Length: 113
Length: 117
Image (cartoon, rainbow over the protein chains, first blue to last red):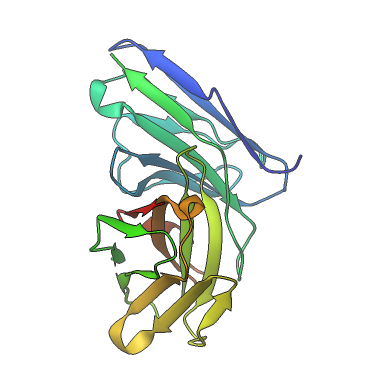
């Protein structure tokens, strides 16, 4: 099925560990986004990309890194996990400019202990 | 900077009652888009509606209706004859639409709706 695929769905990390959250879309969308959702809060933008090779910071980028080597993939890297990074992470994509909707992945629930 | 305010944190209604979820936004863009998403207890985000800044027509889809008023920067959402399945967190969101921006979505904090049988 076409869409945005996020893996893993759940993960528990220890403080200081590293991991990569994977995000893949098969719709040839140019724009991709990483959001985090803390309990009782809306989604906040971590990083985004407007095309392969181009990334930029969002509202809450500290502690994260991204890369966009292909149109399809937009992985999010946590280098030194901290309890403050316990959250649900959503990846999203949309086509290029103009009127369009967003396609969201099903989310990754990350707990840092 | 863009901002979306959903002042109602939680709302409880009895089944079959009507309920309105408020959304107020701030933006300097003249072209922008407004969205509503539903997040059921399962956690996924379900798209409900998109509106562009030049279209102030109200919209109705079944039991759902939306009232967009640029004069008050509001985009309110009404559920008529609420049902238990409407219980969820509802998010209002805003994106730029100029073509030169990133089209990033700015979300409100959400309103948790509980429909009591």
